[in-house]
Image 1: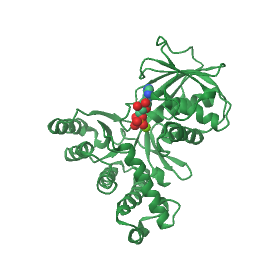
Image 2: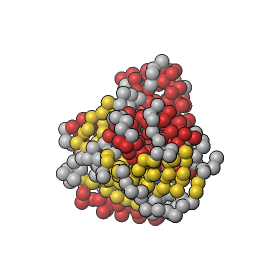
Image 3: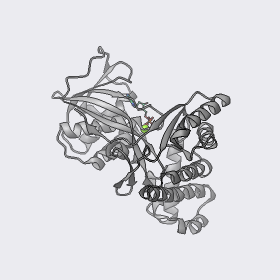
Image 4: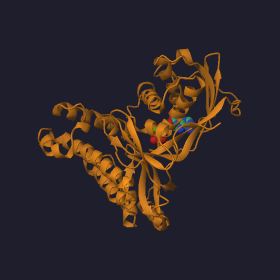
Length: 380
Ligand code: ADP
Ligand code: MG
């Protein structure tokens, strides 16, 4: 599996036909619910992937990333096959392959990517580069696809070409979020509502702590958990775990084998937490979101089993230092933690997490404050 790579001089971006941008995301609440047809509540980050894209008429897809390995990867769009491209270039190549698979008559392009979304930090740098390509191709080749349709293309790209069995949340967040709000998304039918989230107006900050660890078991565990949820739904005779509500939970648990019960408990509780969180945001009670975040973390740690010592420590240190609430965000086994804090407490909480990591001998975490940013769009 080698790319037909030629090392060219890392050139300046191509004379643009256009420039597009697509953000990373953090999920406020609703973790491991998107592959159970459930609810999620992400915001887009100000950190985003930008792509300068110019179509080509010779069928070549030429990909360069400022965060890549210094080479330009050159691929023939008619010869793209899952498993046939390796390294970072498979993410953008996947989108072109998926569009063509879906019957869209798209060709090659010169693509120059530059992203400030931290990679592998659970902030969806992969969805950002998929969605930026999807948005660019949609405009350049006049495909007329809407945000959810492009998100589906990007998800299928990651599932079928890259080989990651992710749900739809990351791509929907990157495509469809709006500045100043969270996206309340029903992953069953992709119906979505923008919920205002004026953190600064409420005197709050949403800290994102990149723990800078990613444990190896992440990929295998994700597939296993997903399969466990699907097995539980099948045993219960439900299309998906989303179809089980809190009222039906005790009886459902009685019908399941021991090993599946914690998974089902998490998914049912987590969907309810998303709905509670949305109700609080609608009521303008942003501070009350804190305990929901912390309860979500406990469920991921104790029932779903996807936290790790570093994320647990960041959450505990943040809450002990006065955060209103905190939880791991993203798939787990490392990645990032979010903490909702009063603006005045942000420096104290940040310092407390840093101190806790130093004392435990962990790599220093990176912390920034997030505000809800816009989804994918053309910027030039
Ligand atoms: P996450 O999406 O949480 O950041 P993933 O493991 O899903 O983590 O995706 C990270 C991968 O995406 C990187 O290893 C790299 O292959 C690719 N990637 C993301 N952003 C870029 C970029 N700007 N340039 C090149 N590759 C990128
Ligand atoms: Mg990813």
